[in-house]
Amino acid sequence: MTDNVHHLSPLLRQSSDIVVERAEGVYIYAEGGGKYMDFSSGIGVLSTGHCHPRVVEAAKAQIDKVVHAQYAIMKHRPMMELSDRLCEMLPDAIDSVFFSNAGTEAVEASIRLARQATGKPNIIAFRGCFHGRTMGSLSTTTSSAAVRQGVSPMMGGVVTAPFPDTYWYGMSEDDAADFALRELDYILQVQSTPMETAAMLIEPIQGEAGYIPANTRFMQGLQERCNKHGILLIADEVQCGNGRTGLQWGYEHFGVEPDVVVSAKGVASGFQLSFMAAPAELMAKALPGSQGGTYGGNAVACAAGLATLDVMRDEKLIENAKARGEQLWNRLKVLQEQHPEIGNISGKGLMIGTHLVDAHGKPDGDRGAKMLKACEHRGLLMIRCGPWGGNVIRWIPPLIVTAEQIDWAVDRFEEALIETGGGSGVQPMRSTG
Image: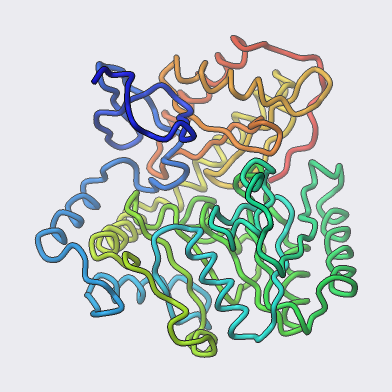
């Protein structure tokens, strides 16, 4: 078999031409030579970087003890200890954790819980949010048409409300929040009344739509309505959680406390692990047998999760995410002034998106694709997102990234901007932070 022949699905397309041989820290090393600074982090998974020694050691030690102890049959110590640690980091009312493998599974579990525990059928989701690819979570996903097309009909009982995207609507934070809340109130009158609405499901900082944060006015208005009407507030922290935004959870930026939290990426440094957490009293209202799965709470993944939390604490990675995020934001703002094809900068901490536009100020997905290749040729691995053909370049390095590495990456990014087109003559628009 030659190097260019394989049996992977042709629909599984890689954004780079790299075949990785090994990886360490923020770097990956390709077969045949080549070293790359990885600012993709496995789509935000590698919070402690590639192959952190303490995470690797914990996983190896657990493999020598037990690899898989199916949790519908028996308990194991890493799963119990990790559930305790996570509950210490969540709102006081949340004291119960269900483990699964992927973010979409955790979202599915939260939808089942919300419907069964409340006896209500409907879920209100928010435009632009990405919650997963399995049918329930996909039905609440509107980050782009591509992930939904060709598989309709979607699951019933889902209503989509506006998200306060200041850049898209051309509004201030307050105006965007007021608009979105006003539309939500209308939805509660004409599409999904409170007596039919089980939950509101939201990414506090959107991922696939382009790293777009909500704001305090909107999130607190959301919680007020949930509390008033007995509706559950579910925070999807799959991408914005686990320290990536400079706080443990994305919702903490906005002064709210959700009823249910789901998360995955970053929780176990690359091992397959996700969770859905809620008050035990709420969990008890769902139906027996509604939570399960063969591999959820895998012993090795849970051991890696515990080691990840230890590294995050001991190496102060959340504090580093905040500091390096501010450094990155400031560098990118300077670039935006010099390169108006950066139409917008959005996000928080080490979850930042640069939105590329053409000479007419329109989203430029073609430029985004060219940028990825130009960065790759310079030894910088990045990925993109956004509904307009991937015009948003994501900045999601491992949380161990240093100030020097941030500067190096931004320098290579600017070189790529110049190579792929330079200034477009358009005026930069407002940035959302």
